[in-house]
Length: 129
Image (cartoon, rainbow, N blue to C red; front, side, top):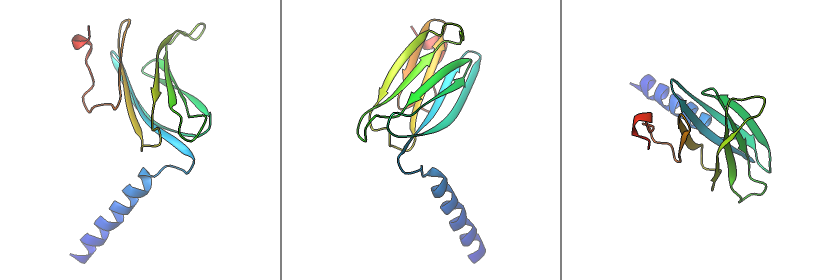
């Protein structure tokens, strides 16, 4: 019984350690659903204006950290056209230091649905206007 408790305590400690983000950074769990693709990733970037671009669901997501300690993060969704990417959506995320900020995009043709915080079940294309 003691061994089981020790193993559970160790696992709980490891899970808690993974949830922590580096000091002075912000973290996002991003999901892009672009039929038939659905991809997710966790992005951690340094604070103070740093940015990172990620390819998800055949599209590009650009995440920019706040310029200051209390400003919003900016998340942009771009089309897959590498020659001339089209900006599809821009979101400002207040309190980006929450661990991690969960956001999602569902893309149905030309209709983009943004969800923050992202629910466990995302909007489906059939249910978008």
